[in-house]
Amino acid sequence: MITNPTQQRALRGHRPQRLSDRAATTGDYIARLSRHLTDRDRWLARMLYEHKVLTTHQIAEIAHPSTRAANTRLLQLYKWRLVDRFQPFITSGSAPMHYVLDVAGAAVLAREDGLDPRDLNYKHERAIGLAHSLHLAHTVGTNAFFTALIARSREPRAPGKLTAWWSESRCRRHFGDIVLPDGYGRWQEQHAEFEWFLEFDLATERPARVAAKLPRYAQLAAATGITTPVLIWMPTTRREARVRQALTTALGNLGNPERVPVATATTDFHTNGSPSDPSTARWQPLTPHQPAYERLRLAELGRAWPHLPPLGPSPSPAITTGSGASGDLRTPPPPPPLAPGPTSRRPGQ
Image (cartoon, rainbow, N blue to C red; front, side):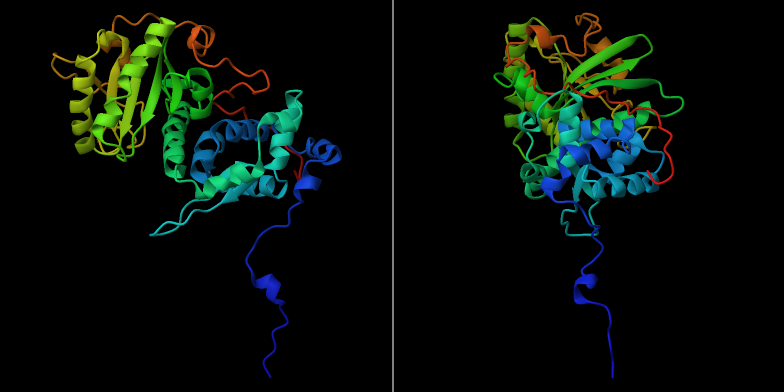
């Protein structure tokens, strides 16, 4: 007779035991959890709150020495309910694990800022619901643009570093009555800084629709008195050529095209650096009625627009002068793009 002593419920796959939502948000549990969390763990919770979702690879390249180290720590944070995870379906191969903020992570973040977790505008159902969002690929792709810059910043001999990264949600709160950029960033190299709004293009819109966004950026520049370049990242050079034609027409129709400096780049443009590194010489400024520029590095784009004034020390000069919705005091500030240094942990943490 064949026997199988293993219970059927034990064959359902490895899913570590985790606390319920209620147990994971009690004051006693959050207090006990504090002794186990490193500065990097807390920083990751803020990054997930700000940017919604990060893949295993993205977390590894911005905060850990290797993917194995990232997986080991993420498994522990998943058990503690600091983070939650899901794996989307793809037609070929397997997708990486995607991580979002969990209930304990939101509670820790709120308590650090002296907030009530209910005032944080966080819901676990909404966070984990990104697994079914039609905008998931766009969000992950936008985040990949910035995490590639963070990875570049962490290299031993990196020429520059990412000093600011705002999410789409934060941009919406500050500029959403005029424009809806996919992100805002600042890159520092030597003694110069360059800032931009990002439009991350997946070739799902007609070129004319992409170009139709430029008048709104001109309106924002006129309202704030601040000219911020717009960088458009596209999947292929063929797509780039079509979009640039539409952008040239749109810029020509603006009363003052200098208010909207535009540059484009593509994923498939080959450079000496990493194919996914936006800091390399792959950016081509758009200048109507002038010969096309050579491909420039991210830090070199400022020379294409000499009328841009030097940047001040503020992460974003439009915070105090923008016409968008003012920042909510209950919203945590954006985390620094670079993770804190490693924290020594006792065995078992």
